[in-house]
Image 1 (cartoon, rainbow, N blue to C red):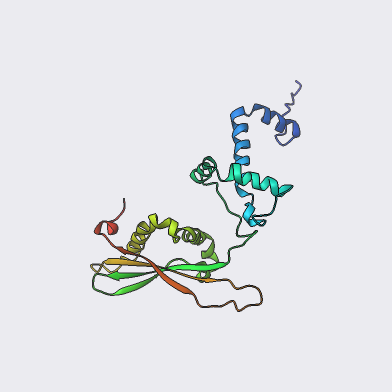
Image 2 (cartoon, one colour):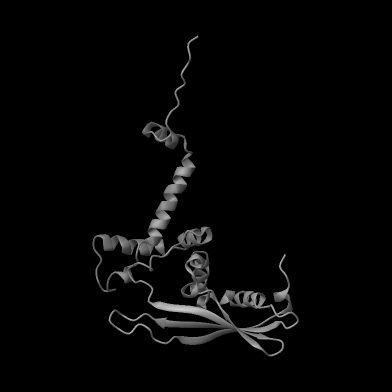
Length: 214
């Protein structure tokens, strides 16, 4: 009795990949193209970061100007990227890297009049194993302390009150949020300047803020 050999196609072969592309529904291909277009248009630099406002753009600069005018600043693009969480900024790398060092603290006042300083997670003070999972806290505070994010300050302060509610019958009654910052000096200048401190929000803790969340 002769044995019959079955031949299976290699999924990594060019022919198999070509067949996979052909079988992919048109709407998936269209969505991928739309998504690539959106994230590319959003990540391109703005005109103000490249040239003087009075300069006449030519070549690639002209393309960037038109992208900023007709695509990047459109509400539909912002809505898509922010709702889906695909927005991103490249200012950490270029053309203008972040030039400010900042962190947040809070002063928690208790019902007996005592106070406690709360240090929001700061990457600089953490060990290497702690840095990676805690990076999301730094990224959150990078946005949350700004004046444009004032809508979330109450919830932010309430969460700090919950975390500091560790003294039994003595409960948090007030949380004061503070931001600390200093500008990074240019090369060759003294880097370690003192931080500027600013008290930007005071929150009166409500009883419901300290109730356990289901």
